[in-house]
Amino acid sequence: MKDFDALFFDFFNRKNDPDIVLNKREFYNYTVQIAAFSDRLASLYPDQKQVAAQNKEKWLLESYEDYLQYKASQKK
Image (cartoon, rainbow, N blue to C red; front, side):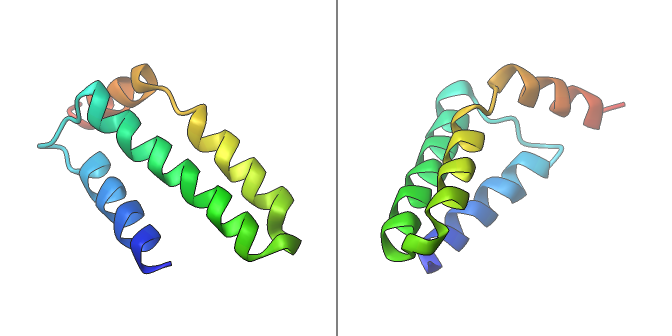
């Protein structure tokens, strides 16, 4: 869980820092790793399997283009 928290907060902080723009590879590296943690959580907590699957799907559907639009809106 510590690794997930560190990864998530690093992504969150970098995503929200107006001075940092992740490249496409960095962005998807974060989202795929976070999605993979959902699989691990599902195996650790079988009663949370459906929630973990939804979270995994959400992270795998993250769009780099949407991220770039978000970054552009930060500068306005």
